[in-house]
Image (cartoon, rainbow, N blue to C red; front, top):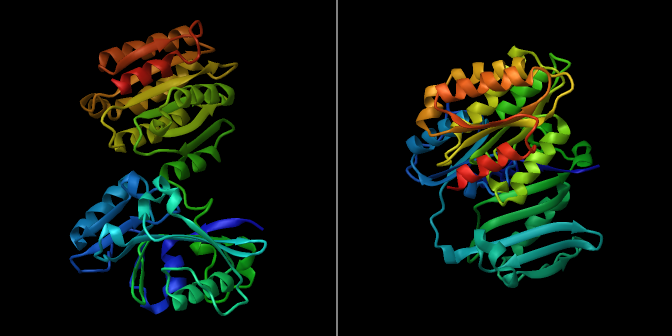
Length: 381
């Protein structure tokens, strides 16, 4: 038994039923509306979508299509489009339900909306017993609250957050919703949610999927996790321990939100395998809207991974888009050691200088964090 997230589309459909006019999209082929006022979002269980530029509000059908295309290029694949509800910011409320041992805990703020984290003093706490027909949370229509609890119970919800919520008399508008369900409930829900609706741990960025598929073809270790696709600091890291040290250095220097990805290539990947892996990371970097971007190629001192061979693979990937990288002002920072280190570092340095991508290059004689420290200083300028 575990709590897993379902799509916002399914969550709203369960709560609102046929009254919900939103549509779930898996691509741009059919946005589904011709209305001039729409909301379109990435619907893959991602937190803080608005702040990451993954929500477009009050847009036309054409603009919604453009947004979906943009997000597809960044590797997203599941979207939600729905009619826009015109409202004032002062109307936005916050509502949260969570299953606890003694019933359902409710948090409510009559104002705050998407900025509720900055105003915790506005949040009031209530406890609801689902067995009771009379339920009161000031500011929330009783009929709606009762229906919400019924849906919560029937569909094995563990957590429901509606933020923002707009209430106008007896009319309620759910502008954004996040739901976690009890995974064991899948055996009991009927005409509710199913495995296709679960996004927790399943819907991955297309770059992560490609690396995962590549990993299955090689005894080497190839791992990739997208952290902040809008970041300015992207990593090609080698070795688990070294990777952790380097990523921690960035976090400790206050640029954690700038880290675009985490992962590693190690265990002796071939030139071609490294090329295919590096291509995915470099494409992530190119897709990021950050004004200043850096690529860090770093790691510990390898036991048997050939530095020169893997560097050739990385150069193959860089060469596919060197002019674009140069045009965006990207710099590459390197710290690596291991077999064929001297030849590999020289090869990389000469290439980066020739293509005007050079940031810095260090060998095993330098501190492991040298390259990432240089990269951090660069993006902070």
